[in-house]
Image (cartoon, rainbow, N blue to C red):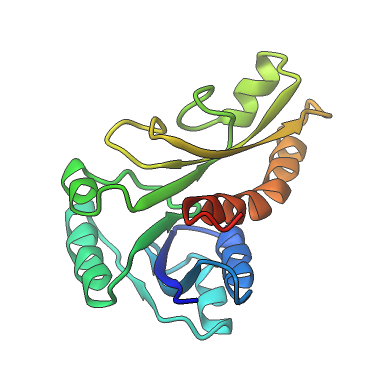
Length: 186
């Protein structure tokens, strides 16, 4: 099987990056992580790119500069899918149009509920029984793209960090399920 070349954008810990890389080692997984791009030199996730010998680039500074350099790298490396994994910046309409339909994101709620930030706090305050994560295509509206896959998680605590951790543990598998669904490899 010829794997699709993928790039993962990160800003922080890179725990979803690590899970995607590990799944991509499966010969039947549809993508190969060929590049990691971060907007922060302090992103711990860069460590995983180094450990797994994946080329990476840190692009600091304003978003216009970031997007210009990122697009050049995506084109040079013939990237076919961009996975946002804890990438804490909003991509411009111009960037999205140039890579239309090839960018996916993981969001820590059951979309369309709780777009944006503070999703666990909102779920607890609203006394929700479930929360979870959603993998979706990125479009020009915040957390509003076509949904690929959702994973529901029962809320068993009123402590935000506990709920966050419960959801994160499910994210690692959910992201890879979504990638398999995109390429009909589920």
